[in-house]
Image 1 (tube, rainbow, N blue to C red):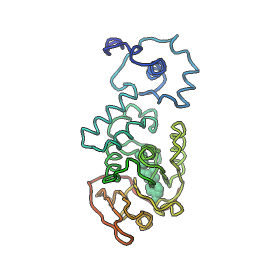
Image 2 (cartoon, helix red, strand yellow):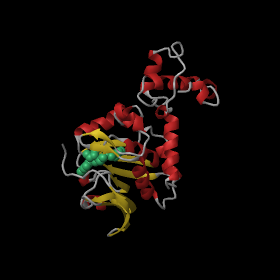
Image 3 (tube, helix red, strand yellow):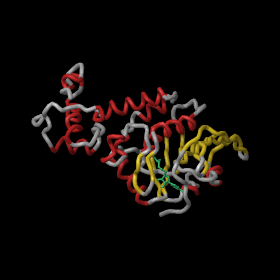
Length: 278
Ligand code: SAH
């Protein structure tokens, strides 16, 4: 294994500010895989707690422990290479550190294009799936920001955090209490002001906040719930996996008060959409 100073063209301290430098050191000592985002509470606490410069030993830099900004950036580059073209979507994904949403034991895989378990038999979606759904949701929109989006299936909160970068208001509903609470914890340090989490059955939508110009369902039902068709504004779009064993990703557009158009975007595989709360 090469020493840090040899694996970079320049010493880290010459290309990063002091705080980034400290962050780098901690990523090799404290965090399993990646450093937290600059400016988070966790970050501040840890920097205050240890004089990292005093105990600095040039860290080894295995590939799976690249600094988070580089892991995230290369994940975004891979998404672009895989065909995601919407720059607003790519930029939004590039602002949300995925490792904050997975179990520390799995953070070495946080920037791979894989779904990972988040507890309660549910998974965090693959980044390419998140990207594809958001691209479909935004397609044809001139404005960079959508107005109001509803997400069904908060899970760990990862997709909700990205949605908050592409819309003025985001509402996300989760039916499993422990995951609703997990998402709250995961999202706390990111301080996202335009995201509201709800515990409830998303098959009912959120009539008190409707209509939405975007609805994104993160779990597959045999059909798209009627309530969600109704809560779409005219001109709005809904993207959802539909099916059981065999599923397709479907895009619905409400083209008039009483007219919806539907098209199949791709094959897909999602956890099931279920009724009620637990
Ligand atoms: N959005 C998540 C993916 C979570 S997996 C991400 O960022 O990766 C899908 C989630 O949908 C699960 O947490 C599951 O509990 C939830 N779900 C399934 N049926 C639901 C329903 N009727 N209402 C709300 N959430 C539901």
